[in-house]
Amino acid sequence: MLRSLAAVIMCFLVLVAMPAKAGDFWQQQWTVPGQAESNNLIIRPIRESDKARFFHSYMTSQQWLYKKLGWAWPSEKSTLEQNSTMVDYHLEQAEQKTAFTYVVLDKSDNSIIGAVYMVPVASERQENSGISKSAYNAEVSWWLLESAVDNNLHNDLFALLTRWLGESWPWRQVMFPVSENNATALQLLESSKARYIGRNLDTREKYFSYAISRK
Image (cartoon, rainbow, N blue to C red):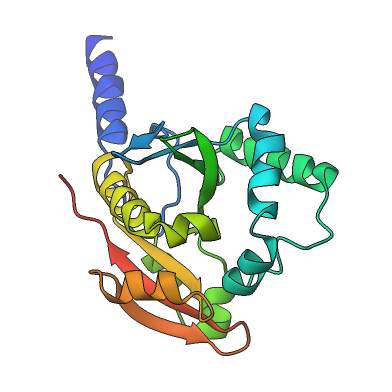
């Protein structure tokens, strides 16, 4: 009896201590990080109560984001109803731990000025760009309003995001996909420790590998 109990406890401890390996997006025993904060910004999970503010935020930079991101979003025809459905989907993903969406807040006025997305690596990356899906735990992408980029908050966000990945997330390596139209994000990545690993000529995306340093 005691031996059986000891064996069960040992198996549990091994499972809990199991380190992340490339290819794992999420393990059930991991804890989802809550938020990150710098002098200027807060990154926190999106909430149902954010719906209207989230919509009005990205629509203020709709044309600029549509051109820069290469996501066919946000459309000039986007509606509050579509936004509500999208946010509900993000909340469902977070609950099921299949993907995580965070809003970026400007601490000076608590306004929503961007978002960060952490999702499993898409299968088409390997099919279309020869990138091994199993080499990465997640894809990480983000957007900021044009006004936030004009105020150089993209530098603050990238510094906060990469620090947060090292301090609070269990992953070993992530991939940053970025549109070739997004010169600001490309400059950030090219001047960081991220490593360029390929591109998709059809979607005009570039991909960067980022090894996470543990604190």
